[in-house]
Length: 219
Image (tube, rainbow, N blue to C red):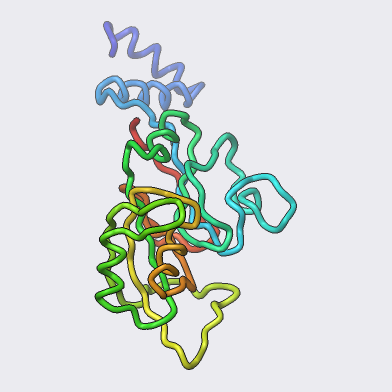
């Protein structure tokens, strides 16, 4: 770093008067040695609460602006107002395309509470594909799961005491309008609660409704 002892003495004499110069030099030296470049956070991971629109504008109830103040981050994909869970927002156009375009096939996972005790026959139908008005769905992964250890919904779902409920997990590689709700309704098990828990490699983890975190994803 120093070519002569005189340079070294001059640097530390100046450092006594301007401590910041030493700090900046140390940081610059470490970056040069380790070749470390600061990563810009280009992805926001958000747990969307129930009854929140997945847009920043609008005056019909709560929107994303009630929870997120980060500038220039926009949703990569959508989540219905009456659904909960994982949303990804980004400030990078290439990353937005990577997440939302069907050709990249980022699977989306959902926890679904349905009305009735779902059976193996119904799960088999979901796995094989369901015939909807806009065409058959692609084969998917569907399995019954215990009730997830998650937050209580506000307001709570409307349950009928005489009819039990059950939980399933679905993994979809396509994203039609209200697809999960239409699929479970088609096999006789209406969706009562719908929570997206994962998109590609990203998961809700410990995020509570209304909370978000930042990360970097290399495009």
